Length: 299
Length: 312
Ligand SMILES: [Zn+2]
Image 1 (cartoon, rainbow over the protein chains, first blue to last red):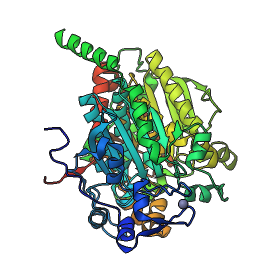
Image 2: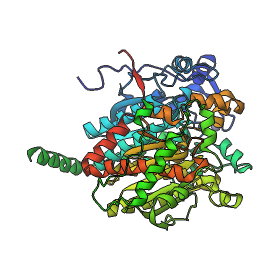
Image 3: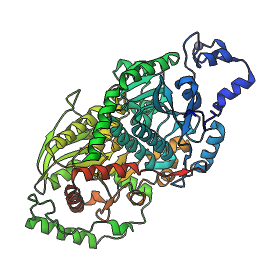
Image 4: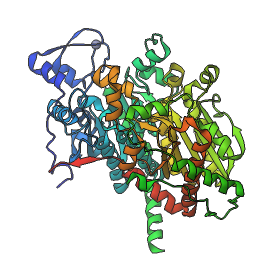
């Protein structure tokens, strides 16, 4: 039995906004050009407007389906979930927020881990989802990203992440902050084993996610016009007390400033990633590592 | 339990056997430290917001105040060799009880002019890149690294974003995990989120009694979650940002005492407490072999966080 046909029957789940659109009407108005688009057409075009190229935000599971060969993947680490370590209450208790996020998004956490093949290369991919508490990173998200890297280390595979996040999850305080260091340390090990890490930045990628794994890719790709930054635009405006330029912190701005390898249209992303993996997955490195392991075991 | 974890200022021992002179001056210092301590009233009644205010106090000792008191032969090095020198982070070579070390710390300004010059201790990417350059020199020459954390956060400005603030921080997080030499981190004032963490990945993390370490400022948290920055007191309490909470959480290894009314009342006394703690932590860190140190550092980082396991 092939590895992917067992457990995972790819649960269909679509973020709330899009669910409403689908049931309500066959037309969608584009946020970019205000043209009316057929929902079916839009889905076929991977949620990209055929008139202006506007990239609609998409959910984690849709993202993974677009990435993997034949749309097939096995979900991993779904059992890792958020708890309420600080007993945090703002306008509502954190456990209530978690419960609502699960119901609204149909997801167990703000990231989905998956194992599958991309262009026949073994890949561990994590896709974040804005519909789960703004894609924020708490302990569970940090743990899942770390495990993703560890899976790749164990199976000699590539890591791909799709960032979509407002930053660290405030409700878990300093524990959320520490996830940045934890993931970065795991990435140091991946680097040592010369395994690929491709980081894809989608709209929006800000705060602690940007300042940790998202900016540590061997190759960093962004979707067009995605908001990407460390500080959010509002915080910057308040600090410098002036309006920000229109294209500030968009993918095109980051590319111009040397922070990205490429801006890639979603419809060409799979092809771009496959070519990159063809370059990075070098069988000679693998045999070198295996030889070294045998040598160590022998001595 | 917290009290039990504290260091009570035993005289410095020559633990790494490399000329850590126990001069008469050192012994006298220790005696004074004990005197200060015995007069100290309990400070456990302070709220989280009280500590936030102490951590931000205008007269609180900054990195260079401690450098002046604790180190000999300090030589400052400047610049990231890429773009600029960032005065919000100071780096240099120094001797700590005779042992050559690299010092890296955030630096705030005392008066209006200095505050502007130091950008209120908020580094730009070039600051983090300078810090990493200094730490790589430490790695190359086999010298321990002592970092001092005191920042409201990384600078949120147009130029900082243009030059890759996020990348500069992320890069430090990954590279610090790999440093072969001991890294001892002390949070001396404000531990402001990623801007603090970018020089705070280490083998040992200590915190001054009234320092804070948080994912976001209480004001920022209140503005976002409560839509009301007047709720900052409540946010400060909820974020568990005090040394006392972080010690229990295992994010911090040790709390360093301050003078009874706070470090700002007596920089010399604050420096003596820090001296004792650094001496002890450094002796412990230097005694480990490189492989052991790196594997301990990794397992420490790997354990961070608290999550649940759903029934399958
Ligand atoms: Zn359009």
